[in-house]
Image (tube, rainbow, N blue to C red):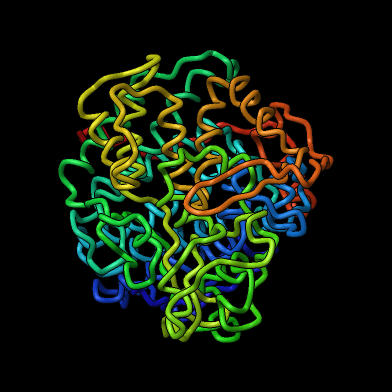
Length: 542
């Protein structure tokens, strides 16, 4: 477990200028101090992103999640996001907290007395984090402010954005640096390594392959082969060299005792035993938003009764895919031995429980079930990348611009994920994009990823993605009945309901800038200015 050593000051006014206390700087900063310098990059700087936006956007916007009374979900699910949407504002700030804390770490390390090798190792760790933050910014807002020196923004906070293409490029350069200079094995449980960077590169290359030549034509229909090849190479490095392995049991991925497991390549690290009154930015609050009642958490922090699976996502599961469904959504008749251990486990037989499914992934029980749990702190790591995604990235890169592929390795990786999900799931003999889309949705549901999959597709097949979102019929609430393991039907005793949702237009693929930031920096409204890169791309990674 990584413990944070720095206390950060964060507000809407100074999120671009993070001021860590007790920061060792200059020659007094030695190699022994460097781990504590980068520790906060695994938790507190990501806290506002993790609390609500991670799943509110990733699973709400993609319509895995329905929460009509939760303003951290329904603006995204209803396609009605504005610059005043709270989680959006917090996420924008959180990403720049990551960026500027990473910048401060890099500057401090460069001024230290550590060896050049040690400097490169921990600079690579900070650049990994900064690169991930810029991937999010490029994906969600497009044009964004690229910063390598916080003092420049302090001196002049009215600054132009840089174009989306440059933001993607900046993220790639950071991650390539990390892939070159991070160690092959993590220096401490939970820290990223070289293969974490290659895994993240496989994601970013794959997304960028659809964007790089299609900025003016998002319906071009094809992706850039150079970046498809890079995505495949990066994924192959991870799969063949890293030593990461899929966990045998899917449900075990989401148990606290399995934090930093063999499949976890990058995860946010939360401090066990803390609670909402003592934990600050070091706790994982997701269980409080997901758990439907105090019988799960053992306290009052359980607000997820109306945070539910959409009919669209439940009907999408293959009937044999009940293990992933059960680990993600709590249905009527499901039994969980890890919850309410003192009474022999929890059997979901709630009144009216057949009419909806609540969130299970991230719901781990009470302090009586595990002492690592606290009020509003599950202590469960937040996955940012798992090996299963790299398997699917390889398969999708191999598929490339073809309608299907029967490549043996791609099939092997995709079918390994299906077999882990359930031995009853039939192996594929050929792979199409729809096969990959299904696996991504089922495998990573409620891990904040599905919207980014749709975004990546929209870079080159925008109308197809718009048609898909239209087909989800978000304005219709379908009354259904469900019973575990997988018995689903529309309820003939209840009528369908309708509600107002936003229109499906190309504008849904970019988030608005926070209104408060537009007021403080009116240049956000102006055309972006190309970024001047101060280093060459690394060319000897593969």
